[in-house]
Image (cartoon, rainbow, N blue to C red; front, top):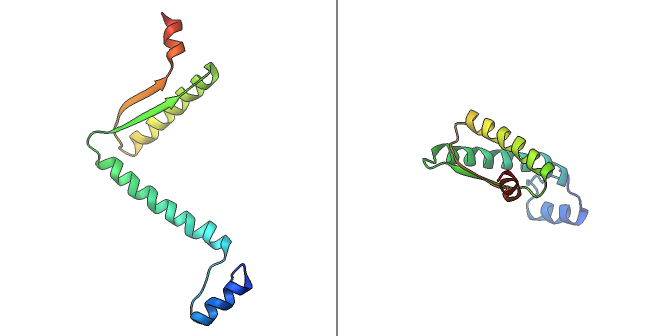
Amino acid sequence: MKVNKPEARELFEFLNPFLKLSDRRSLDEEILRNAVAEGDKVMEIALKEDQTGITLIFDSLEREMHVEVMEKTEAMIFDLNLKEVNVCTIITDSTSEYAAAR
C-alpha cells in the first residue's frame, strides 16, 4: 500500500486493515486515464446516435490563426467522419476575411 501521507495511511489501516490505497501517481496515471477513456467512449456513442449532428465552432482573430483553424477544422472533420459522427454545421469567426473578399 502506498499513500503520500503517513497519517492518512495509519487512519485507513485502522479503519480497514484490508483496504489497499493507491498513491497519487497511480490515481493520476491509471485511474484518471481509465476514467477519461470511459468518458470518451460514452461521448462517442452519444455522438454517433445523434441524428441531428454536431456543430463545430471556431474563433480566429488573426490571419495566421485563420489558417490554423482551417487546418484543424479539416482534421477534425476527417476524424469525425472516421468515427461516423455527423457534422451538420461549421461556424467560424472570419468577418474580416469576408469583408476583405468584397
